Length: 146
Image 1: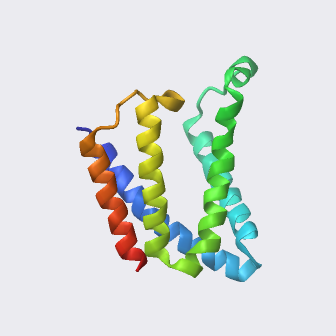
Image 2: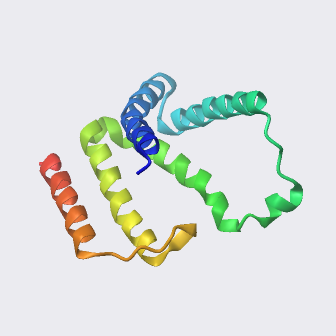
């Protein structure tokens, strides 16, 4: 197993709740979730730009950009939708339920993506064990919501 990647994924997951809280503070100060989401992405763009200046990767050629499937560009749209939704919903339903619902959606979506081998993921069939694991986690979400 790749322990380093697993630890990193866990820590980033913990950081999501911090991100939601920070974005909520921006939303309260600036007047709403859409503005907070835009600020989030502007700050992220600056941070990534600085990282690229430091790392200095080769920039993709125009042909490489043209080779990206049209639907792959929607990742940024989904990221913006997540940030805006979490910033809006977080203060209404609380951090725990927000992340529990987000996590359960990710689990079910991941299971389907893996089962059908979508989006470049290796095909991994749904098994009874996986279904039971996801079902138990979703029961946990129901308990959290009550």
